[in-house]
Image: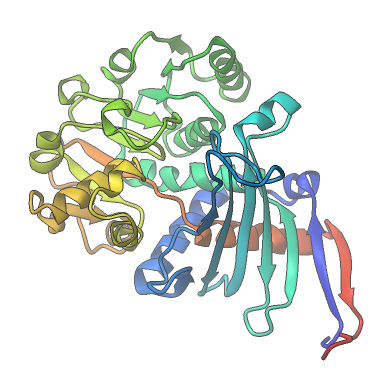
Length: 377
C-alpha cells in the first residue's frame, strides 16, 4: 500500500529456485513477447522506442587518471523497456562489462534487472540477471529453432562454445530433442572442454560430440548452425565467414554475434530473418551508412544492402510475422535461412516478470523496504 514501498530482492540462487533455468517456459515466454511486440504493445528506449539501450564507453587515452580506459568489452549499459499484455511491466537491465573480469574469477558482464510499477515507477523487484539474460538470449534463438529448423534435425554446429552457446544449445535440445551430433569450433581448448562436458552432463542422448578445426568443418552437413563467437568490430573482413557452398540445403543459420556471408548470397538466395525489424531500422538510423561495421550481425548487413539499393526490404522477414501467420514459415523447403538475433530489453522484462511472479508464488526472495513514507513527497 502506498506511500510505503517494498520490493523483492532475488539473488542468483533465488533466481534458480524461481525457475530462471526453465528453458521450455522461457521459449514460450519469448514467443508471447514477440507477438506482443509485433502488435506494438511495448516500448524500448530512444525517440523511436526501439533502441537496444544507452551505452557508456571510455576513451583509449583518458585525460583523468581515475577514469577507466577503453578495452575489450569495457562499458556500462542501460537497457530500459516496457512490455504490455500479460506482463504489463516496466524495467531496466543495467550492467558493467570488462573482459579483464575473468582474471578475477568474475563473468565478463555483471547484470542486474530492476522491475518497476508502470504507473508510479516504484521498484517491485531487483534481481540478479546474469542467468536470466543468458537464458533469454538462448530462448530467442530457440523460437527460431522451433519454427525454422528442419523437423528431423540430427546434426548441429556450434561456432564459439561460450555461455551464450550453451543456452542456445539448450534451446535446440528443447525444441529438437532428436539431435544426436554436435560439431564445435572454438578458439581455445579450455572453452571446448567446458562445452563438451556440459553436453555430456546435460544431454546424454547426444552421442557424437566432435571438436573441429574450422568453421567449414562445423557447418558442412549441419541442420542448425549457431554462431556466438566474439569478434572485434569495425572491419567486416575480419568477421567469422561462412561460404554458401558449405551450407546444407534447408539449414538454419542463427547468430547473436559477428558473422559474414557473401553479398551475392544475402541478396539473391538467403532468406534473412530478424527478431525485430524495427530494432534493425533503429540501428540503421543510429549508425548509417555502414551499421554493419558497428553491429556485426547479418541482419544489419542486410539492412545496409537495402539502404544501398541492392536488396529489396521485403525480402527481410520478421520472425514475429511468421508467428502471427503473416508470413510463411518457409517459402522453399531447400531455402537457407539466416536468422539474426539482436537482443532487446523487453526480453529481460518478459522473463524477469515471469520469474518474479514465480518467486512470489513460492515465497522466494528477500523483501526490502525503500521507505515507509517518503521524506520529500
